[in-house]
Length: 378
Image 1 (cartoon, rainbow, N blue to C red):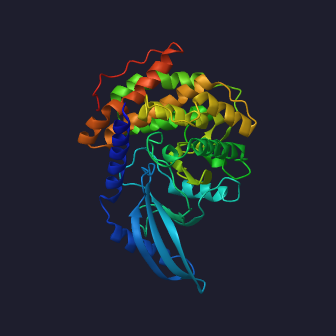
Image 2 (cartoon, rainbow, N blue to C red; image 1 turned 90 degrees about the vertical axis):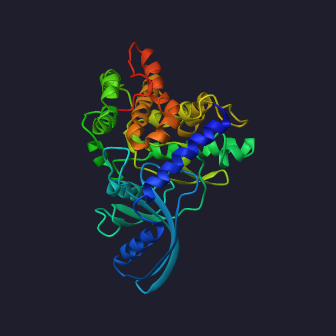
Image 3 (spheres, rainbow, N blue to C red; image 1 turned 60 degrees about the horizontal axis):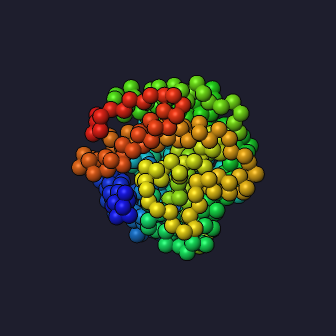
């Protein structure tokens, strides 16, 4: 795939994501809702909201994301700040969205050494915002696009800086995985989906989304893989908090240092291996065959550097690569119902790559995954 093809794919995805989130509400309307919402907070008055806008080059994850400037008086003191609104989309990718869980998770992380934006106000039911959502502080920094090897801050960096940025990403992951999730009160993540074990639960969570989307050909095709992953979950695992959507676009940088880790809606209790292999598997879908730039860590180098930074030895990588391929395959299939047909047809060769990668990896453990014919989107 050429560099132009990769960038066009990323641009098409971002354009659709933005359009879907603004389809029913204009920036001015969001501004009015935000003034009403902020003004309803205890001790807050004299609210002004301006410059409501979309996120720069990132797709914004599966939630809606808007940036804005606000000024207000709180307990008699004038305040002003750049803020971020995260809200539940009207037509989401997954079967379940819980903005309260996202808000509470990030609030729990505020007291740790994992850099996250401060969580400020929550509208769990959308009574004032019109959609369930929350407002958080704006953290200074820039993120890479999903096509991080061809454009954006990592691609544009000098080789030495590019390497440092990747090491910063791995160090941030190591910090996430070192957290005592029980001490942080995150046991509720054990109820994210049915199952007695961490990976079983997450396999079931994605299966629930696939059933919700009613993609019958892929339900049939991926069922053997789903069953195999549940039956073969390793026993010798370290259960940690996983970022979940651990791609470079969800790490803000100031220079070469990570200033914030964002987009926690896919977080779960899993293993370090789940996060470490996520970008590698995702790159095989979006940036397949893109030549590595000087200073780019290879997959094996990422593993080695993560082990050095974390003091952990990664284990059972073939299993967790297959698990990650399953997650991404389901996400790709869900996009069949998420994108309008003209965009879907343009992206189909890329979207179908996820299930194909999962099928190829499954074959290595003796599983035959019979995928539907190309172009099957119902």
